[in-house]
Amino acid sequence: MEEKKEFGLFTGDEIFDYSNEKNPIIEHFLYERDTMWIDSKPGEGKSLIALTLICNLTSGKSFLETYNIERPYKVLYVQTEGDRAETLERLELISRKNPINNDNWVHMNWNGLTINTDSGFELFKEKIATINMKYDVIIIDPLYTTIKGTLSADDVAIDWVRNMRKLRSKYNCAIIVLGHKPKETFTNTGKLMEKGAANLFGSTYWGAFANQNFKLNNTNGNLTLTRGKQRSAKIVNSIEMKIVETDEFLLLTNRNELSNRNSVIIYDIVKRAGKPVSVKTLFKEAEIPESTVHRVVHKLLDEKRIERIKVGKAYFYQLLHASNKS
Image (cartoon, rainbow, N blue to C red):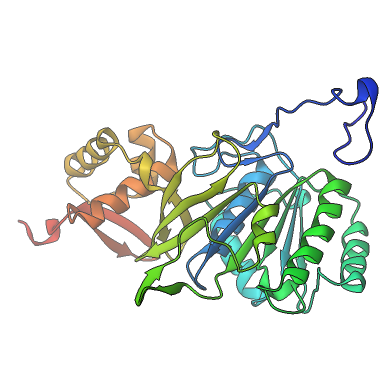
């Protein structure tokens, strides 16, 4: 079946020989040929989201066990700052709970990449083409290191967007861009005010390229993605997540999916056990997904209803202060 063209000249029957219904890559979050921006202050967890998405997309496993991914996708992850060893260490911990298919993605670690210059973009295109892979999703992490000039300059934004449109046309892919806000607040009538989720980076041309953008906030490991601009009613308004981290794994979970029923089930198993129990035991007896067990366990820990103890290298759970009871 011939692939429908996104750009070009169309006439006669060709004009409507195209479906305007875009298929979901991640249902209610990312669709074919979409460009999504995720921006925040540095260190809020954007890269953690990106690495989790790599695992889910390459394996075809639903994002946060909530947002459906029907099949495995090919991913290009362009990392332009940070340490490669640290990234791979985090990814290894994430992949213990979110399986990854390493045949379905490419890691480009490139300090000094410039996408808004002709020479930089041509070199970028040549390098990623050396891997014979048709990328479904390209992740840029982060934006500001891929430009020559200032984020607020219109010519910088126009050239960057023009080149990324060429790339999207070549691969017919979706693009996820991670960005740092250059200024988190602005002054209005003498007051310091938070910039809204719909705000991007200064030049209006960044926003013109976006199908949707999200602002990320992190409060003590509780992450919230708040939608700003969007061109589709299918996109979720917000996603609330929690970082669950131990010596054994790193997990991003959906806080909205914690039901009282699951809390009751897990708490009852811990209570009936009469001794410390492992997550593996809870998973087996509760008959709910393992990542859900982890989410509920950390919810019960936050509520101070259970406590965690370490035996050797493993963690076990028991009723709070059960060790002090006779």
